[in-house]
Image 1 (cartoon, rainbow, N blue to C red):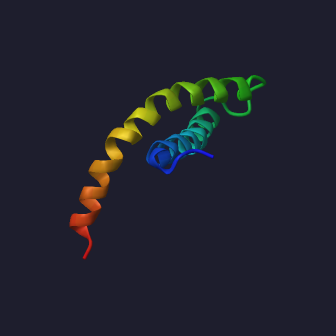
Image 2: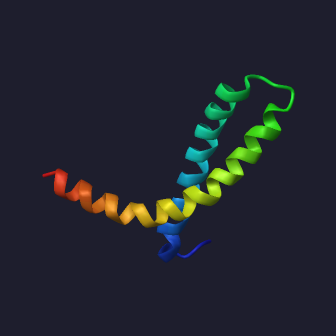
Image 3: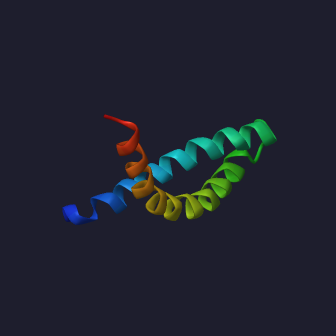
Length: 73
């Protein structure tokens, strides 16, 4: 079991992985259609996107929480 203190990092890892997977799949499909190498293109694009998305999520999440706190009662 992973210690609870790592929950925000694990959350960011899973969230960024899932979101980049879905968005890169849509973008790859729109750019290449169902090309014979679609899966390879998708996975390649996803890994590149995830490398960017994970640190961005870790950096942006605390800022986003503060904005949400100010926008909600």
